[in-house]
Image (cartoon, rainbow, N blue to C red; front, top):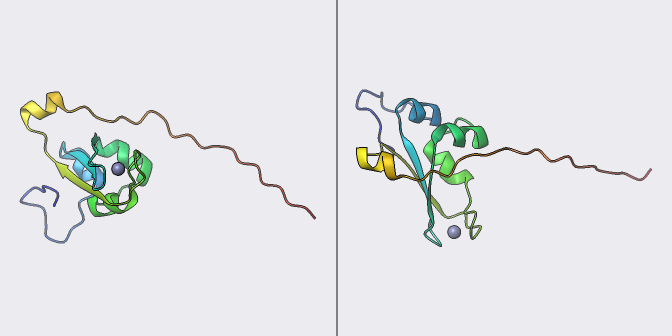
Length: 104
Ligand SMILES: [Zn+2]
């Protein structure tokens, strides 16, 4: 479960924007090869939209083994973690041009 502020109303959705505002990090781990990576919520939002952590879990796949069996969590990095976490940063979203032909 994501860590949410205690004041947060029950049932209200906690999205990546909220996570960013709260200073959370997102950890995503592959259930198959156990590879864990850390992301910045704002950058994940660029890629998959302003969704909840449950939706993040459903949408991501392991880039190493292709597994869809993923675990994702939002958390507040502790003081020490904040300095040692190595994030996987978004470099670019590339929209490739595809040409489709049709014979008449
Ligand atoms: Zn994997």
